[in-house]
Amino acid sequence: MTRTMSEESGPRTGKAFIALSGCSVTILVAIIVGGGSCALMKLRSVPPAQASTSGDVPDSEAARIRIALLELSSEVSDPGRTDTDLTRVRGKLEALDICIESQRQDPAYLRLRALHESVRMQIKLQSDGTAPVEVPPLPASSIAVEPDDRYVGQELVASSLVTGRIFVPSADLDLRYGPGRFYMKDRGERHDEVGGLTASAGWTFLVLQIGVRGQMDLVEFDTPVLDDYRRAFAPHLGAEKELMRSDSKLTVWRSLQSTTSKTKVVWLTRVYMLPMDSMQGPILEIHRQSAAKRIWIQL
Image (cartoon, rainbow, N blue to C red; front, top):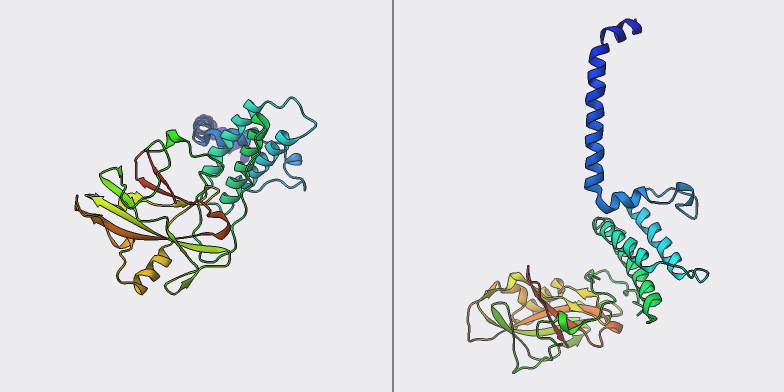
């Protein structure tokens, strides 16, 4: 019976096989093209027997990236190797950076990003002999805002600033950016408590008064604060809400959608919660969405 069915369906089977082969090739090409660097990293990964110190095969892309980062770290810091090609290592690290960005929704993303930064600092130490800055872990907190670590380990060079230097705050000095002008009344106030909200142990609230003049939509501007290790903390919206309830005289940034006057300075309050031991010289960043330049103001 089986032989009879094969004989009857021979021509159709051949056509189906050809169609399936073409489909497979199409899918394979799509995977290779769509996967980009991450796909190549998978193809070049170590054999399963070497993929983990415990002999287990990584069960996720994040795990594979972590192992690849650890291998690079071992290669760079191995005292027995004198022929490490740092250019090749940097290339691998750059490819892994692309893979890490594809894992933003993974709970392990921040750990991967921290490990990537650690390897980058190792390479810098090997290449120019400069000692990297150790970034301490954040104090435990259930109300802290998750920081953005894109600037960690980077120096704020003059060419990256709108004014060519760190802007020194002053009540009678303004700085033009986009369609408006910005002012700073002082270097900010530090509090253990804002309204009815108490900062977590090891954290401190930073309250800033930012002056704004001009016709612009405030929702277009991001205003994080960088701590001493360049970790960028977004405004603490919960603390700002508490501040609005406790002091009706203050205008919180989040409560104003736009400014319309070219002559009147509107003073707006922003609240942040930063690690207590990492805010000797915090920096306010003002960034208009889609703009290439940023304002960095040393507080």
